Every structure is written in structure tokens, then in C-alpha cells.
Amino acid sequence: MKGCSFSSSCLRIFVVAFVCVGSFAWSGCLVISLQPAYDDQSVFFDEALLGQWENAEDGERAAIERGEWRSYRITYTDRTATRVFQGNLTKVGVAMLLDVTEMRGADPGPLLVPVHGLIRVTIAGDTLTAARLNYDRFIRARTQKAIGLPPSAVDDRRNAVITAPTGELRQWLAKVPADAFEAPATFTRKP
Image 1: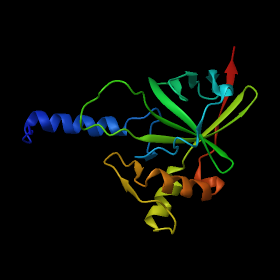
Image 2: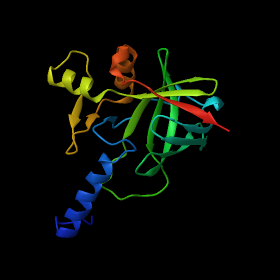
Image 3: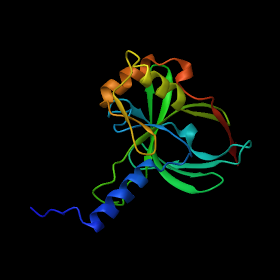
Image 4: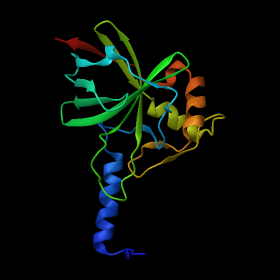
């Protein structure tokens, strides 16, 4: 079996991998998951999510197209960058969640761990609201060792990384209060 001694080139790959793991469309600290919030039975596709969306408050834009299987291809642009994600919709209780990952298809190397961002979404006509998990609330609950919180770790970029398997993650998401998510951003469909 070929191995790699921990040479300077391996160290560079290792550092790049961890920097990439922490990068996500939003700046700041995030709550992310190692496992998806959906499984084959709960993933679904909603045509209403397709289109060009814009948040007039801060100029963020999202172009959401049909992806492979029951997924979405999301091109997200904010003030600093444009990123492409794959998204899958799932329902947990009454909440509709969009589980996003960096776009699949390119092999970024053996040390890059794909993570999942979890966004609660609602669609009403030409209005889309999106709210990610509230980082401050999650870290506070983690620090206080709150009962029922899924297993997690904090990475070197201070992201909270939920390590629970999909089933446990879904059970936790079914019980979280509304303030477990940040105030939603509102997007309007563009023609």
C-alpha cells in the first residue's frame, strides 16, 4: 500500500484541505454537518424553488436550476464571491430544509471532507426565505452541554461540525425550537 510520509507537500495538502472544508458561501462561523439531513425516502423536488432569486437588502443572488436526480444546482453570489452548490430538499416535521454541499463531480483530493449546510426555506409565490442554523445559539448550547444536542466538534475555523448520523440529525432537527435558526433572509424571484 502506497503511503505518504508527512512531508512538506503532504502538509500543504492537509492545510489546503482544512481551509477548503471551512469555506462556504457565507462568511463567519457556521453550523455544518458531516452527514446529510436527508435520506432516499425523505428527499424531494419542488419546482417552485427553481428560478433567479435576489435579496434586495444586501444584493445576494441565487440562480437555482434542476440538478441530477432530485437535486438542485445553486449558483450563489454575494458581495465577495460566486459559489456553486448542490442542494437537496427534505422535510423534517413541518420544516422544509435545503441541504447544500459544494458541487459534486470534481475530486478535490483525499483530505477534503464534504460538509452539509442546513438551511430552513419557505416558498410563497415569488418570495423565498432562507435561514441557516444559529451558530451562537448552537455554541452556547454546546458549551452548556445541553441535553439532546447532537454530537459535534469545533473545527480550526470555529465552525460547529455536527457529527451525528443522518437519522440522529433528523431526530434533533424535528425537535429544535424556531430560534435554532437565524432570522431569515428574504429573496424575491426575478423574471
